[in-house]
Length: 169
Image 1 (cartoon, rainbow, N blue to C red):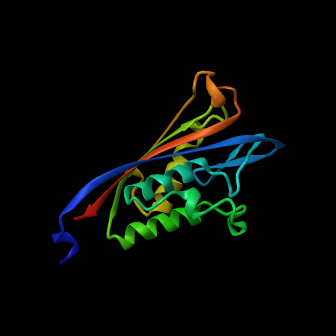
Image 2: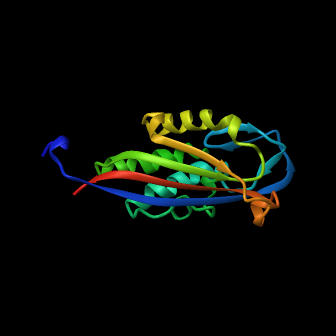
Image 3: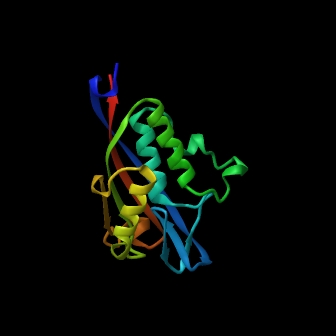
């Protein structure tokens, strides 16, 4: 059966990731694969890119294919300081293996700092490139938590992502 003759269902899944700030000084952090000028470093086993980690979990969730922490364990030395685009490539390979089509992804970044607005278009375009889809199928939003909780106290960053795919039935 040709791909165009198949019947598809739409499936959406949520991915969430959190990383706290280190006490060490930094010049930048990675958000959505883009370097943002910032004076704090994010702690994590890989590159600590909360946006790409949430994205990967949302893609894997669409296929009930596990989660980033299990597949790319922080107990595994080979993932130390790894570029999160490797994780995105893996998630896309699972999608392709299952003949799925990534339709849309909606990402919300929650932090008091750094300010995300100046970087939203760069993040959106980079994610479109990584996912090999139009940037019109990606939404990047940012919000604060109004001084509440760990993000409000400027202790870290959270990202939430919902991705929708089309899967053959």
